Image (cartoon, rainbow over all chains, first blue to last red; front, side, top):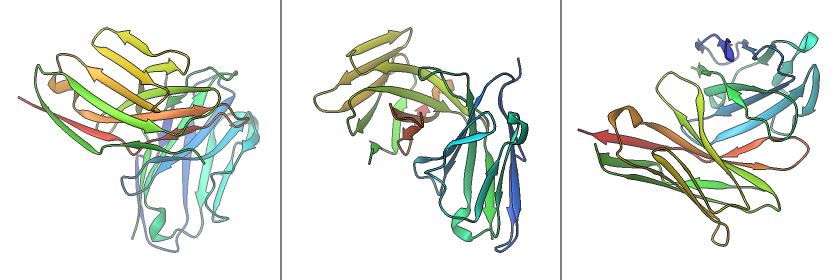
Length: 114
Length: 112
């Protein structure tokens, strides 16, 4: 069974440009999460989808970040316009329903904003 | 809000035991996790413990939880070079969002 996949693995962009990150969860997982780790600090929660609905987006840093999950399958996270402080590793995770279920993480996308 | 802290670096010799420590802010009902991240890979769940437990053992891994002191530790027995990685402590707070609160990660280096 394929795990959580993320694309691209690395992205280098200039300040002010737009970048879109993609996450493909494990098939059948209704829950999809985005996290990011900035400058070697702790991994911070960004938001949580249940199917196509945003269940909790309390971790989104500002309105330059837009997450979508049309159709309840893959998700995209767009940063527009990107700022220097957005550099970091963006992780996606998915899980089946229920509170006790394990979250399976993808390998992350390393974003560098110059 | 919730906060999880860890020391950032740990070096041990191959064959020795490693102990990675973590402190967290308490919640009424929570799971506590240890994740491992190898270079270029995602986060791999190693083990977890529910807050009403004080110890869990799984092969070379032993998790100890001191709920009074809000202290969690991961002991790796007979540490091998393949154990070199970043280890994240994480707390799951039972809120509606089901999200995790992670520590900054401890980079474990295993020396031959």
